[in-house]
Image 1 (cartoon, rainbow, N blue to C red):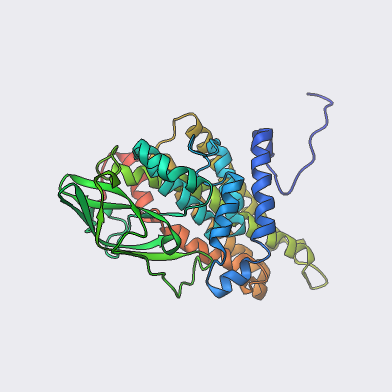
Image 2 (cartoon, rainbow, N blue to C red):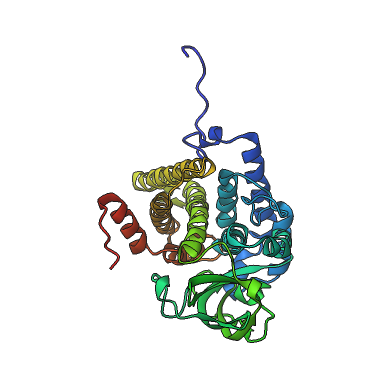
Length: 395
């Protein structure tokens, strides 16, 4: 190696992590980044301020055309991409906004994943091709008004009536709920917890939208109400009974958050870095001051450590070696660090940091939801605590 020239230092990739990616990986990343820059970034501040996501069905069809819906699944019109490629897509989508990544994550990693892994062949053929194309939006009903971190306590119930099922209950904080054409709903039965594929036009099903949110404002969030919804016998997911079903779906979705949260962090870091180089105080850019450089250095370290962690978990998933505890490791670390990066970026931007002209406060408020959904900080700490000690502290 003596005499060979070192590559130049790239502030956008200080660890040279792009060298870990194949040409196909880079093409996937760049395609999603261009789509987000064209379709989301010019409008996201307005959507966020209005508290709505207009044109969500059109966006879903465009994401389907990109291959971003259920992209790590195989067959049935799905892209069959690698876990790393799916992660890169999540990072780029959340760099635009957490609500956009959440749309894709719930569609692919929760609703489609549940049908793909636990559904019958008939269910897969009926729903997955249309969901992969974005023609049908899906949602995932697990959380209830009184049962979040403890899904085993759910009260939604499905009872037999002849050969039919009759589904009754409520689910809360459901992304995509009021625009979904199909819902995967988890309910108690006499035989244990089962998943049901529920067309949202079924009599007795409704999905009132939740308003007045101060986080994930550019995202559709709803309640699901099932009032004696009658379903045929083949509506049940046949290949799983018990909490193993929904929890495995959540693990798949949490993996996307490990990547996605770093997208929000990157957006805030880049905004702070650009601002620090152009904003002048005391006769020079604030980026020339030691305290500002210390903040930027710490932000860059945690950002790229988080991306490296996400990449490592992605390679383990592609090799079939990723454990749920390792997903908890990634979600706990990366979302927590992403929030800290956003908060530090806000201090660099000063008062401008709270303006929607910059992405920082929008990402910070979104990440407050990302921090607690699909497993709170405390639950992931206890997952790791149990794995480390072999002692169960959940109860």
